[in-house]
Length: 362
Ligand code: NDP
Image (cartoon, rainbow, N blue to C red):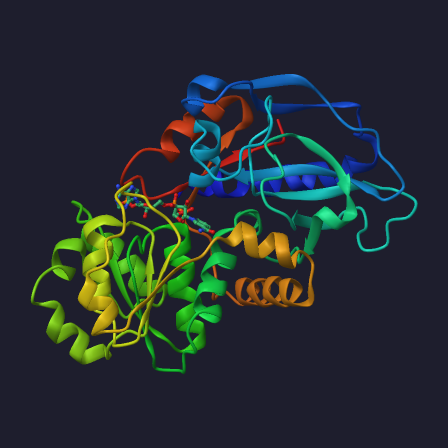
């Protein structure tokens, strides 16, 4: 990624920080959709979006950068489990800086870096006014891209590695969609905690390049979908040990092949359906292998546990790993706010290899 692209958000943060106290307004710029449909067609830039008046418990956050996640796209298309009333501002994730606080606010100060503590807030806007409970402080010595993409993918990886199977150091985890944002977070957290990972990705012309990058992140093995479906997997699994945990974000044949590699009484957690094909479980997998087939929805965990001790512990741990260089965001491409359509289209392009970020500070 170009250095200029990487540095742009930091430049805006510095510029913003020096003028934060004076830039409060009663409206902001926001991306809005009035009807469900293809994101690049239905999302529009509203240059005069109303901003709620600040109350004593409220903070104003100047949004810096927000990623375009598959859940944002699905929400705009109307195929996601959460459907906000229309018109709506999309954007479930992002990083902002507190620019003003109400008189009763105790947990945050101006200048703090914050991320959402609840799902689907609607963050694709230049400013947001919300109760202080809605945001969580993150440390400001981590990369802005990492902060902006911390609250969805790394937390999903964290919960799936912690909450479903007890894994000891040396245990093996298998996952498909391993080059996704979640997949890369799984690789890095597993490496930090001493677990081996077998990582499945779709074949592509630059397979070796992607494989090498995932190995650099800490992957134990990286294979193609075709390899995973072949007899060659047997010797690979002999060398790693049978996985107790499988993480599935693809579905269809990919999920079936992944399940075949699991140890008896192993668990497969499904958290995405990128192929749009259903997960089919063989009868023998349930009877003879006693596999546990479950699903994980991070929004539900965050809603139930928002700002709980567990939530703070997880965010602090992820930030600490990011600060020491053990957790970084997927490669990002940052787009100016008025070029949001490019960001939306690119986020839906196969094999693109980057997470699209929208720079909210024009
Ligand atoms: P990214 O945008 O970072 O990556 C998308 C990934 O999906 C890429 O690895 C891409 O691979 C792969 N992909 C796209 N289309 C297909 C396909 N037809 N078959 C197989 N793989 C495909 O995604 P995220 O990490 O942000 O999200 C990944 C998935 O996880 C999404 O489905 C998302 O909704 C889900 N998710 C679920 C959560 C939950 O709580 N359940 C929380 C967070 C994410 P390629 O390079 O080959 O194109």
